[in-house]
Image (cartoon, rainbow, N blue to C red; front, side):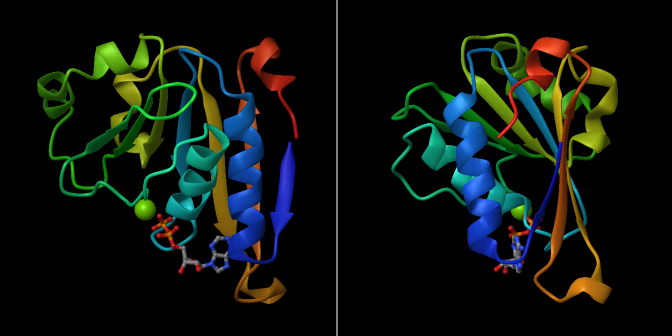
Length: 150
Ligand code: ADP
Ligand code: MG
């Protein structure tokens, strides 16, 4: 699925629609340049899981956990990770293979430890289409997951 958005609100709303459909054990891999809207998407996603607290980029902690929603959300931002071994220290396996939902900003930096089945969300700008334009693609290598369109 490819969705084009023209404002932060539209990206937030797409995140929310996907958050509403998230299921236990889902792993969302979120990629795109700095400032493209990954955190905006994540905030909508968290709202779709009925998480009420403020959701910001957990850049200095790598992962932030939210327990007050429909499902636990593990929000990773691995931008500043030095080595994938740091993920072991965090105990990422309990997140990726547990009953919560994982969402990983900059997942391409930890490609080697991602589960086989993930949902990939890629956000791109195209300045020719305006400063606030974003092209967001949502894809999965699992046919069941691929059906979860919005
Ligand atoms: P990232 O987490 O990818 O570094 P952020 O979500 O923190 O990026 O920031 C995205 C910025 O881009 C915000 O300032 C937001 O207001 C702005 N923005 C403009 N247009 C859009 C859009 N269509 N979707 C998402 N964010 C947008
Ligand atoms: Mg961010």
